[in-house]
Image (cartoon, rainbow, N blue to C red):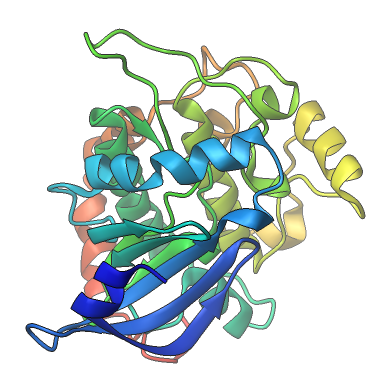
Length: 294
């Protein structure tokens, strides 16, 4: 482990584990403040895409999180021969995946789902203004702080889509989690930041259906086939209490034609134009997230 890291932080217990590494608590030796330490083991990186993502994660995370209240903040980065270590904001509450699971198949009321989606869209839009696409938006990466404010986490798959002179640089590579990736990613085409809007649409759909994704299969290959077909349906049993406006917004977010798919800014404008965003936010302010069901 990096000598500088061990000198500057006291490393604590494991609090999470992923495909490439582990997350632990850590404490600043200078101030006593607690953080989360994300450590990625280099030998587990399977291909060039994974290695590129890890190499740029700290830089892209800093860019996306600076001045973005809805992104997990990053404070330091260290590297040694075997590991890459990132010191990030510590958020100990359940993530959105846990909260969806806690509903035991029951859907979120529409106004509560919209409260979360509006903040998630703000997080994504702020990243896009900085030229960063997250590329792995999913409930597992949607966290909440002690006050219930949404925080977008894990920029391990993120990439910049703006060049040094502000020009758009297309992205490529199959990156993300199968049922949340956009069709253009699965198809192997170059793509832009609207892949994040697709993923937010999947999250919204799952909240309204009690955890059922709009496109899925029994295997990864079947899921990818369903994503590419993008046959969006609203089963009456799950959507009978969902408003036409919410379904129309989902159609615009989960649109296979990228030119017609809404941007994150356009999704935000829908909330603002309808004047419902303040109602949604008031709902979010009064939701008791601490281990209770929505």
